[in-house]
Length: 475
Ligand code: P5A
Ligand code: ZN
Image (cartoon, rainbow, N blue to C red; front, side, top):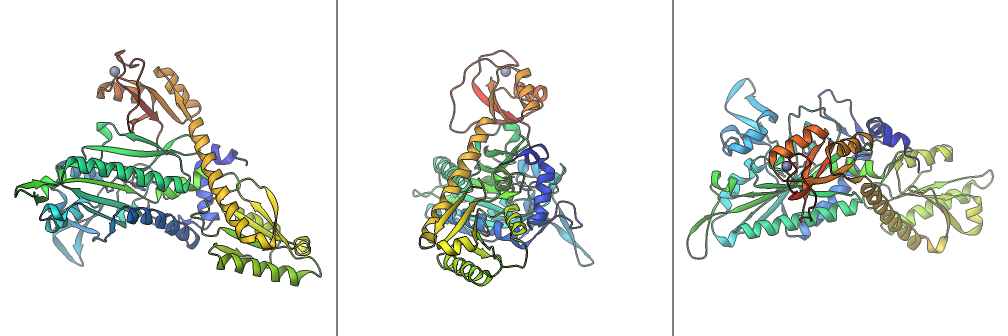
């Protein structure tokens, strides 16, 4: 597959595909807000069905909280408000009257959910609580806004919130959350690096933050999810107490973790090419498109079989679409290729004669004949193969874009020339970290989640390196 424009002009590629593939209309007259189009919305719903299922399977319950948060409640956790203050939209009026208490449009829902947790939690028997919601949140982002990636209205914010009796249980929950997200990104075939963020990049109000980063085609990283251990920080200000079995009052321990439609952008870009999208079969709105190729005098049987093939697949639970528009087949091919449909089935006179269909893979362009009586099994098998191959290929390029460096110049050079992620030794001191960021022009993603053997010396202070640190130019 050709990937010149995809790589060199990634932003343009992305914006064009949003329009051409009917994903989004980006002309809405408010900055940072966009319109989901039918095909894009279907894609979004399939992607979020995957995470919903994974969360439900691991004991999370879906809830739905209000959008508005009273100012006094919102301001209670000092770090949290310091982190979000500059990003909050405020509702100040109801009709013509000024509100007594301003209302924040949630930028995230800790301060909306936890006061209610305080009402729900009485004793240790009420714990753990594991809930999630999929909602819109508003953030007045000041960096350049970008459809799906940096929004002012995040339309699809999946946030999970938990409360536990002990620190150990909260730690175990962090591990579970990481596993859920790993499975989710694996389903999408989106590669990732999991790091523990440095203190200066920790979520406002958290004890520590973990983040998943993937790579855009231009070599910049994109944070596609975070998991936070909140300790008792919020519990103490929102009075989240429970009675222990021996009658004492204790504060709960909490975690939260979130993803947004940014993961859809990630899936679109890691698998795409110059032709357009190449969607993972699991989330593709249309998995198989059936295109009749009629020849003079043979129109009827071709149309008939094409329609039977599409019906057979639909009945078997495959998302199949028959494209019987009065348009040249070549145009149809391009139309569906650009929209990322993983598999095309062509039915021409020769196929009719031989009682077969011709399958063409979107990812490789490979053609093969499938006997009509093996249709269902073979299509399923091909979709599985495409799914696995997409994932493997994405991981391969991701790994190829992860480099090693032991000094500032090499690290900077790698990021300048090739982009990607650079691993290097670091003493662990904040001062050295910040200087490393400044001199390489990269951002510290953090140290690898789960720990990693360190070697070498810190390129800033020459002390023995306590850890390896990952750096990248980031979105
Ligand atoms: C975790 C869920 C939180 O807000 N509170 C509840 C925690 N974490 S976060 O890192 O700030 O956001 C989680 C993920 O949401 C995506 N995201 C965005 N996507 C699009 N536009 C935005 N403006 C935006 N802000 C955050 C990121 O993927 C982030 O990791
Ligand atoms: Zn150092």
